[in-house]
Length: 329
Image (tube, rainbow, N blue to C red):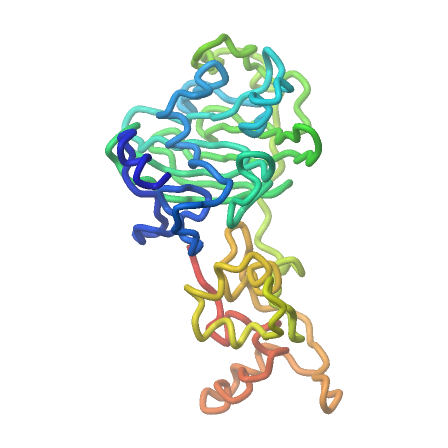
């Protein structure tokens, strides 16, 4: 499928300048699944858009002119004929003059995509400067309540937020897309000024002059808070093959060991799980061996002792910044 993808006009799918680093796409194939038999997963959003297999369910938004508040479903919804005739999309293209195009889709882990190595059942965003003969770059994989932001030329900050995810049949993801210099909308907005999609493709109309926009508000972005779901497991855990390891062992060969989905789930900080905020916790915690209360500031207090203290799993888990565990995307 990788080589067929090249014949279809696709370049590779990577991340952060690494050629084969997008595990959601056959053009990245970063999961040791190179074989004649292959596995059941497909192409990322940019490649899927270019293939035009689901062109009737493509949607485009120009954040410098309008907004998007809609629902994404997985590719199998088309095959199973469970997709709505209107109001549901397969791929969303975010495009403005002077910006590299972004492509968004719900990476539903079922059917033809049931073996996708990573980021299944998340909203995945990739960047690609042209539809064909251009490499793509994985930008984010979002779960419910998470958002992706980046500078968007003269339009302020681009915001892509996942309002909610529903994992069922067919499963769906409701998202909002806007640029702060043009509009401010939230997941609670009930009167969002976006038009119903017109197939096969349409651009969301301009609403900058609409009085409705003045009524829309968006909660202020809060500073990152330590999240337990983004904390490496302290104790040993079982890999997919049953082998019991700990996250420190994973850190010695991240590239290979983080290809195991079980490893990513248990070691999100070590593996640099997208959407995960890597932060030292602020509160003190109890060391399991002697019951003493310690903090990350204590771990960093004496440089000569920090390396020794960070050998402990609990220190690496609670103080990933101090211990140098974080991977920043």
